Image (cartoon, rainbow, N blue to C red; front, top):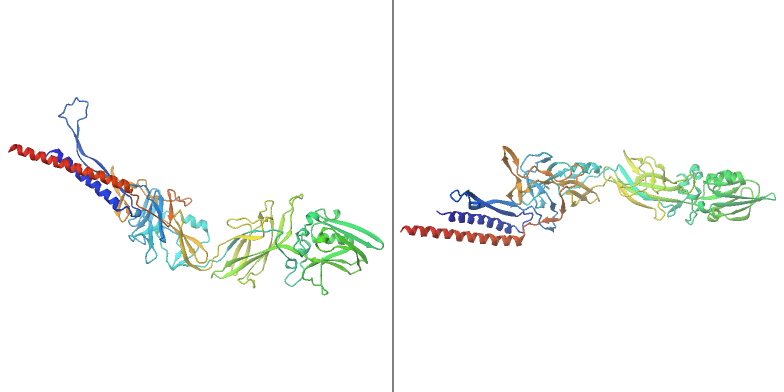
Length: 602
C-alpha cells in the first residue's frame, strides 16, 4: 500500500470528525446554555528521511496523515433573552451554576480544594423549576445547589432579625440543594426594635395647650407650664408669637394718681434686665414689677378653662391697665386704660403649642397589630444667634395602644426630651418600652435611610419607619438579585433573603467534560505521578468577605442561548466538506495507482 491511501484515509476520518463536531454545534444552535465545540487537527506522525541528501539546508521531514487533536469548548457567552419562567436565570461572566443528583447532598468549596458527598455537575442553562417537593431542579431533574439560610422549617418561613448575620451566612462556602415550598407561610415576628425618621416643623402643626399642660384629670402641670418657652407658643389662629423677633410687652399701670410704664422684652437677660424667656419668667417679672398675676384662666371652681388661655389678674389696688406690644396683639390682650378693680382679670385668646403625632404599627408574637404612638410638643424654640446658642427642644410622650388606639397596652407612657443641633439633626437616646412581657427599643434619631430633622421648609411628617416586627403572611413572589441572592416576598409586605444560587468558576474551563444534558463535570488525569483536575479546583463565585459575586452577575428572568455562531458554523461546515471531498479524491487516486502497478505485472 502506498502512503497516499494512508494519508487520505486519515484525512477522511479527521474531516469526518470535524463534520460531526460542527453539525452537532448546528444541531444545538437553539439549546439554552450550550457551549460549542471547536474541532482541532494535528499531524498523525512524522519521520526524518535520512536517505535523502543529509547536507541539504532543506528539512527532510515527512508527515503521515492527520488526526483530531482536540474538540475544545468555546467559553464565550451566548446571547441573553428575557424569559417568563419563575426560576429562570442566566449567569453572565466566568462561572457555572452548580447542580447535583442528591437532595441531601453537599458541596463545599475550599480555597485549596473541595469536598462533596456526591458527584456535582456544572451548567450555564439556568432554566430551573421546582419539583413536587419544592426543590429547585434543572430540566434533567438534578437539584440546584446553593447557600441555604435555613429559614424554612416545616413549611413556615422564620424571619431573621439581624440582616448583617444573614449576609454573613450568604458568604458561606458550603452549597446544598435549595428548597422553596409553594405553600410557604411567614411566621409572625415580634417587634423588638423600631427606628423612625421624622421632620418636625415648628410652624406647620399646632395643638391646643391643654393637650400638653393638663394631666388626664384636668389639673395644670405647673412645671410644664412655667418652663414653657414663650417663643414656642401660638395664638388660636395658629400664628406663632415670634417673641424672638418682636418680643416686647408694654405694661402701663395708673393707680393712686400715679402712672408707671414698663417694657419687658424676650431674652436671656433675666429679671434685672427686664427680660423673660419662659412663662414662669414673665410671671415673676409681672408680679415683682407691676403686682399683676399671670396664670391660666380658671373657672369658678378653680379648674383651668378649656380651651386653655392666659389670664392677667389684678390682686392689688384698683387700677387702670394698658397693654401693648407684639405679644399682647397676638394674644388679644391689648388694652388702653382698662379699669381693673381688685380681683378683676383680662383673658387672652386660647393658646396653642407647635405639635405633631406619629403612629407606627408594631406586632406581637402572634402577629397581632398594635400602635406605637408618640406625641411631640415644642418646649423651646432655640436660637443659634444667641451667645451661647440654644437648641430647639421638644417633649415626646410615647406609649403602646391597641390597634384602634383607644386602650393603652404599656404600663405607663414614657416621656423624653429631644433636641436638634445646629445641623438640624435630632439628638436623643433610644428609649425602652414595655410591650406585654417583652421590651421594645425605640429610637427617634433616624430610620434605615433617613435622619430625623427640623427643617422649616418641609411639613412635619413621618418620613420612614424601620422595624423588625412582621405579621403573618403567605408567599407571593420570588426575586433573585444580580448576586444570585434569592428573596421571598410575602403578602404582609416582608421581603427576606432565603439563600442564594451556587456559582463556581474554574481556572481552565477547557478541562471540564461534557456529559450530555448541557452538563459538565470535573475530570482528572495523572501528571508526573500526581492526580490533578484538568480544570483546576473549583473556585467559589463570591467574595467570602462581602458576599458579592467576583466574576460576573446573575440575570433573573433571563436565559443564555447557545453560543454557536451560525455563520461561522456554516462556513466551517463547507470547509470540512471540501476537505473531506479532496481527501476522498486523493484516496481514489492512490487506489488507481495501485491498480496500475498490479497491471504492470500482467
